[in-house]
Image 1 (cartoon, rainbow, N blue to C red):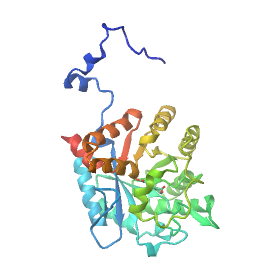
Image 2 (image 1 turned 90 degrees about the horizontal axis):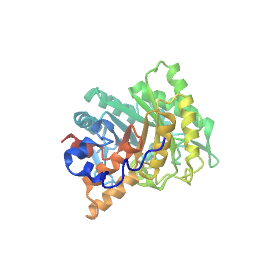
Image 3 (image 1 turned 180 degrees about the horizontal axis):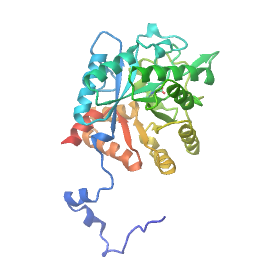
Image 4 (image 1 turned 180 degrees about the vertical axis):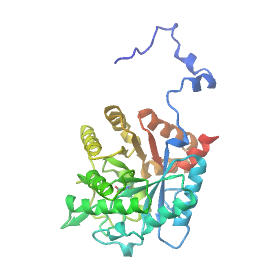
Length: 334
Ligand code: PBG
């Protein structure tokens, strides 16, 4: 389908007529951003302090389980439907297979329960990947320097089961192993978790923009090598469609593209091709870039925040994971 660039020649058509005043601009807006479009990633930790600032992510704190519950109450009151949990655990507890990832009494189950007690109305999403729990910082099981695919699937499926059992509403595999969605879906079905959503990080790229997050969860210092044998190359686009197709066929309810802003072309292709709920993650490095420019007085935070988040919606996203979620929701609620 091709659209005429202009329905008529100038001066019959004057596009500025539709921009002349706030009332007409809002009347013809093609895209609306609301708090209901936002997913708020929360970094949680097992340390003694209630809140510890993350230096490379101004405004972001590592939270204790009870602080995470307070954040969830705030999210609910702001109209944010879902929070996503990412763990920073004591480095001394990390090992080669990420034992902590499948501890039913671990940090994530604690946080899910604290949140569900405080704000039962809000959805809770959990990251399925081993990197926050391994002493090599990889998302799967490593043997002789290789990240093993099939051996990782068992660990990931068990991790997702533990999360669902603790009360998670959404499990979100971010590990990029082949076949993980199927392994997780089978484990959930076999254990009676028929209603647990899988939001798969289907097109996740090996990216420089995860740097601040790896500091926040404490995996940067651990990571040996890089993640290019499992995360996608930023040169590729068709490959993203194959990844998404596989994840949907394996039982994903919704898919994600990550990072966000440099990958809106992928969001557009995925959302138009598959017509499933498509999300994007405005990742830590994107947040850090904006906040660094704001701190220097080079960008207006509120305007940059709303413009970037609206761009995700315009590209075809059902919603966006963003560290700006509470601040954006406050602005939008006004
Ligand atoms: C890893 C994971 C990563 C992020 C979420 N889950 C980073 C990585 O793959 O190393 C990044 C989030 C962000 O940068 O905000 N399972």
